[in-house]
Image 1 (cartoon, rainbow, N blue to C red):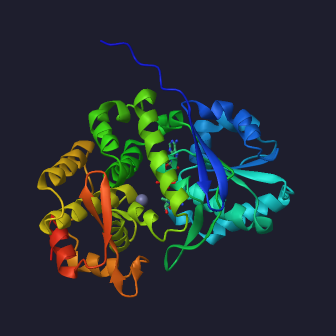
Image 2 (image 1 turned 30 degrees about the vertical axis):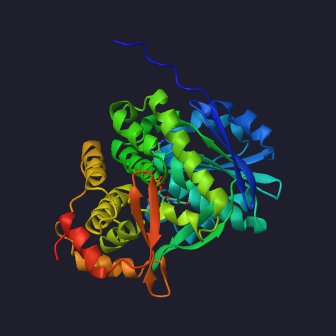
Length: 367
Ligand SMILES: NC(=O)c1ccc[n+]([C@@H]2O[C@H](COP(=O)([O-])OP(=O)(O)OC[C@H]3O[C@@H](n4cnc5c(N)ncnc54)[C@H](O)[C@@H]3O)[C@@H](O)[C@H]2O)c1
Ligand SMILES: [Zn+2]
């Protein structure tokens, strides 16, 4: 037996976004230093917490002494990510007399971050929000970048704003209570960062899966920090997604389509991304634009991570049709992110319906 390694020290990233700079603090146990971190970030002293009953039950003690007011607890889960929930936050803010010198602390998964962020973006025409993400997906993705918003009955994320956080505090220790399936769903997004920007990150995930699933801080820290660094670098270059930020959509065109045709009930978002990435590598290999060996590496990696929901009953043609309705269709052309190598992608405008259907059928979807 070897001695357990102490978790690596804190990592602080500065995101120099076009809309203004903010810091991302990543450290095992960071929430225990939250007051100091917020004071250092110049965050107003009137602090109101928005969280969910689930997250609060597990992690209230980490932040309870941060705020004078009762936490604003909203039910989370994608089906509560709507304007009605935002209205409940407004009600609580008005009753508490929150003013422009107040700040919202959004503590939860991506749903809480997006909903609370949108409330902060619009209450009194905007008060600051601090993101304290508690799922792996939120820690490596949704908490950074400033996109906030809610769903409409007719579509996901149709209502929203850009509202960059005043600060982001990422504490991997909070992931100890995250259900394994949620954790795995986030890990597919980490794999995505490896695929688009970092072969070493890709390899590191594969080499440390048991320690990651055990939520070992020394395994989580470097993987989360590197993912945040990649997301932050892309956001810095392209906050509003005109160019480089598109690489973040790797695996996502088909993922969104898979989620839509199953009415958002079958897949965790990351699981659909896993399928989307697999389809993209199959398609790229069929074009002769990606090595079969690297496709096999990605497939093996995803298999090793655990089971994905079944797809054999889904129609490839229907999924591709749904992909055509995606926001990323510009003037009738689907801009598709293709892998070039593990660690590099490119955007192409000429992927055909037949290619997409073919790739999905390789994954086991029916005609
Ligand atoms: N703004 C962005 O840039 C961006 C990027 C990606 C995704 N998103 C959004 O993020 C949302 C998905 O976020 P998510 O995957 O975090 O899902 P989620 O917020 O629904 O959380 C998943 C589940 O985990 C529970 N949970 C959260 N933290 C926990 C913890 N520490 N221990 C135990 N349980 C915990 C929650 O109660 C919930 O049931 C989607 O709505 C998506 O649109 C936004
Ligand atoms: Zn995603």
